[in-house]
Length: 267
Image 1 (cartoon, rainbow, N blue to C red):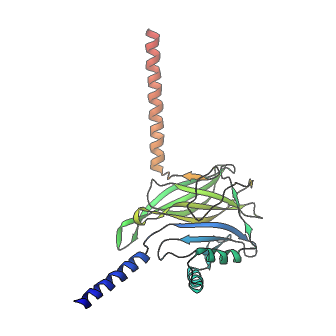
Image 2: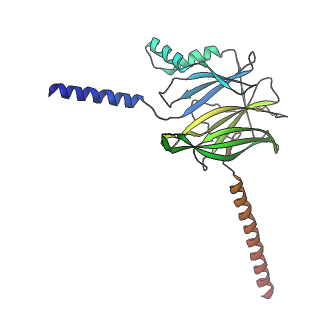
Image 3: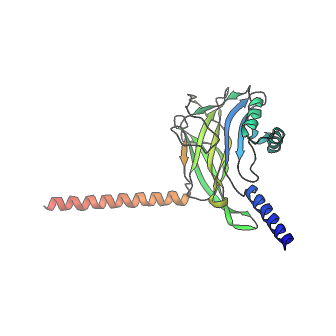
């Protein structure tokens, strides 16, 4: 009986420990954007709290292809922490800062002052996995415009049609025709949804106003400010409904005005 009790207690402790360490979903934040002219890439720190809960990683995004690759990985960060006997993420951030120390900071800009706008269009829903049909990802297309002229499309993921998408813009030292957009939106759809942030290259811009916008992106969700854009999905159906409501409202207002005018004339 004592052996059985010891076994059950041991199993219970191991189960609770593994459950506490296993993370299904969580937010992913990116910050500290720097430019390396030697390989024309933007370096940024990514901190994902989903999966096993990695320490910060360093990634680089090519301004030519728009693709990102890992420079300082989760495994490297964990090895550094284990070797030091500490789990302070400051040690990993210090190692990342050492790699990017001589790179140039990106310049946060005001998207509205640069006449840059974004339109989000819904594409479809897809299952998160074949085994979990209850959780679905919403797929969208983001269309970027400057002064009303479309300059690029790129796919983005979300969780539902009602969610907001927050965009921030950054100018790149030495570039006048390209910027990068930071997107912060609900993208990890587990447990009601978590913020997932990503970077996107946008070319074809012109007459950039590079006046520095005073805000700092930290290891947390992007907070809207005077230079950011908060965008909601605008499907053709939504637009058509808006047009119909506008026409109906105009007719109603005209009819009411005509009725009141005739009433006033009689009196």
